[in-house]
Length: 398
Image (cartoon, rainbow, N blue to C red; front, side):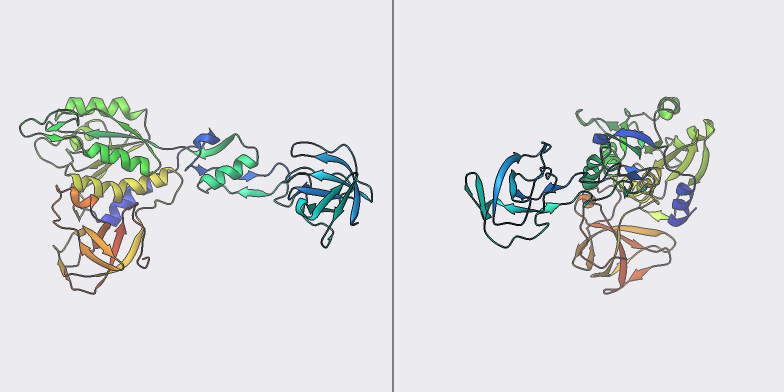
C-alpha cells in the first residue's frame, strides 16, 4: 500500500501536457499559452492626443485654427507655427504638432484660439510606441490566460491563440443502489450525487466533464462504458466499485482490458480504496463511492493530474499553516485528512468525520492533514491545512 505522496508521484509521473491547439480567443480564457505572443507593430503605431483640446504648431498663446481631427481620422494637413487644430482623445496628431492644450484652457475667438496657462512642449501627446514596440514579447509561453491577458492578446491582433486545451474527463458512477436526481428513491437506494460534485470539480479545475449514465454492478456494462469513452476523452474517473468486495468490479474489468494497474489502495483516510491505472495510455483514477472519500480523493489526486495535463506542475490544493484549537487523535500508519474550519489561524474539526457525511465538506474550509506517524496532537500544535478552492486564506501560507 502506497503513501499519499507515493501515489501522487505515480499518477503524475506518466502525465504530460496535452498537445496544443489553436483556439479562438473567445475560448482561450483559463488556458495555458503554448507559444510566445509577440507584438507585430508598435502601440500606438501613431502619435496621438491624450485628451480633447487643441494641437499646436508652436508654443504661442494665440493661434489660428485650420481644421479638426477626431479619433479614427487621419490628418491630411501639417501644422505650421502659429496654427492649431481641434483634436480629440486618441486622434492622430498632425505633422508638426509640438503640444496639446486641454479644451478647458482654450477660448475661441474665430478664427483664433487663445490659450491660457503654461504651454509646455510635448504636453498631452502620446508618442508612437509608448505602450510597447514591435517585436516585443508581451505574453510568454506557459502563462495562464486570464481576462487581462486575453485583452492584451486582442490588442495585439490575435484572433486565435495556441493553447493547451481543456482536458476532457469521463465520469462514471457505478452501483446498483444509484438513482438519478429526478427519480424517487426506492428501498436501499441513494441519489447519484457524487458525479455532479465531480463534474463541478472538473470544471473548477479547467477541464470539460463528460458525465456518463449510471453503470450497474455488472462487469460487462462497466467494460462497455470504459471502451465507449476511451477514445473520446483524455482521462477517466470512476466512482464506486474501487474496493475488493463481491460487487466491486473496477479493478477486475481494468485488468481484463489490459490496463496497467499502478496502484490500488493508498494509506490514507478517508479514501483508502483508491486506484490508478493507464488504459490505452489514458489515465484512469478509481475513486471510492463514499461521498467524502470521493470528493477528497478527487482533490488530492485528480486535481493535480488535470493541472499537469494542462501544462502545470501538478498543483493541488493550497496549503497554509495554522494552529490546532482542539485536541485531535488518529490511527497511526495512515495519513488523515479531516474536514476542518478556520478562524484566523486557529483550526477546529468540522463535526463528525464519517466518510458518508458529505454535509461537512460544504460546511468546512478545508482538510486538516495529519501525517502517518501522528497519533495525537494537543492544542496549539502547528498543522497543515489544505484549503478548498473557494476559501480565501487568512493564515500564514505553508
